[in-house]
Amino acid sequence: MAKQNEFVNYLVENMQTLGNVNARTMFGGHGIFLNGLMFGLVAEDVLFLKTDPQNNAFFEDRNLPHFVYEKKGKAMQMSYRQAPESALDDPDELHDWASRSYAAAVRARK
Image 1 (cartoon, rainbow, N blue to C red):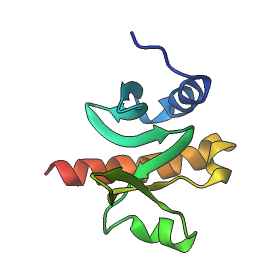
Image 2 (spheres, rainbow, N blue to C red):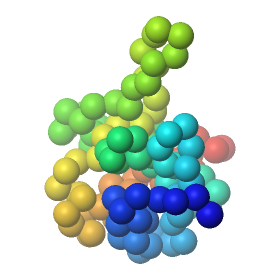
Image 3 (cartoon, one colour):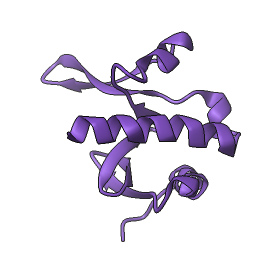
Image 4 (cartoon, helix red, strand yellow):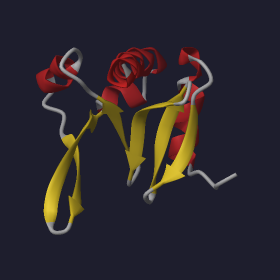
């Protein structure tokens, strides 16, 4: 099993209220999964959560930035946005944000 950092372990542990959440290393970071669906990612110790038109307003209201990476010199924006800092310190709030993002991942699969 790939070595995970303390922050990722903390997130996975605190998201167990959703079900059997696990993390996998990928692209220098970690994907956060539930039931085989990726609904979160960690890059440079920052949690980003899956967004779609149904949950994006929650992120917009807090002006939370998108996950952006560079490909061939161009900025590529993904359908993930930074989780609010307050959710990282409050397991109930983290559950709410993660739950909405998991629902977005379920909708994206269909």
